[in-house]
Length: 182
Image 1 (spheres, one colour):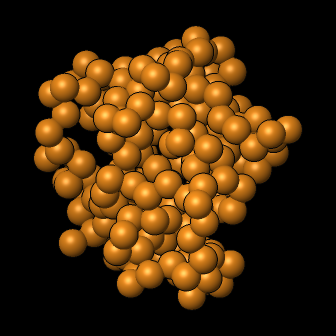
Image 2: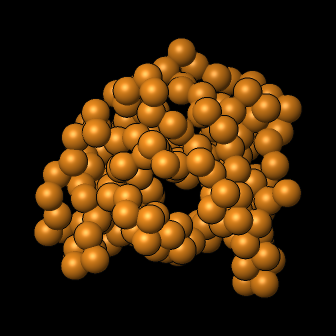
């Protein structure tokens, strides 16, 4: 299938998840994240969940890494050029929803992409080569192409990978791995 079809299908599938199903799926994902070897990681970039799109709740992941002494980094969308700016997400950081319902920091110190050691990436579906389908604006592909070569990239998804996304482009960046419920 092509990205447009996959995007529509997996938005529907994700929205059809009950609260109980979502809770069980998230538990499996969290357990896998909590078992990752992250001793050499200082700065963790996470997406802030969009509740209206039934995304994985990243709050437990943020709390886990904070307890391990890691700095958390989140993004703000720049809609003029479809890029992301990155900011340290402290306990006192205030958030506001942008025009698409994405929570974004408003009183945070800017972070440099070169300082990010691990990026958790939102997605709708991935394939066996760890390419992903997102929401279609390319924000994360632009961001990931700016990261250091040794920056770890991990997608989070409620669904197992499909065999192949048919329309991969040269600017699509594959992830190191995708965590989904086992």
